Length: 245
Image: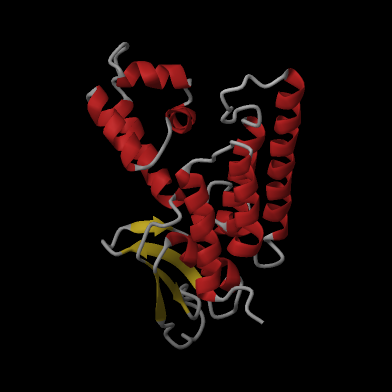
């Protein structure tokens, strides 16, 4: 893989140099050196990309269309007992990965839902049953659910609260401290919203967008992908009517 090919893959997935650095367990400076051909790319980078890209597909909120598939009865047949009726396979199409995951969380544990999995239009498997269990119980922190996408954005804001666009006038130390505190307060509000999303629906226009506008007014700009993931995750819950009354 050449430096240009590495950069093209990163940009194709909408990742910053810092984000892809975390994926590979290196620093942002290392990624910069790879892309600028200052240092050679590791010989194992192609294999690492194969493993990482599979995970990235799972964490892409807007990936789709996809189909959620599950049986309406147990797939296991006990050879020592009378055979029950043959279960039917159900297929539910969804426009995005996030919408399908929201549906899985909604129906998980129902008596008529067995062996769920999510597949892409190409026929490739996106999520298997064991992986979906991690999404439902919350152990998968990267799956594009409302809680995870909000928490990811909130943590980014908190980690970078001192990084914001400054005007031509050099701000005083007190002004920097005050603005950093305001940005951190919004990050904390996003974290609270993430926690509440497990018990109620989150409104993009009424709750998330106002916080985003406050960040922009303070000169703090999350990445387009982070904002987009939140939008698609919220939209996914609306598509399947998870919180409909």
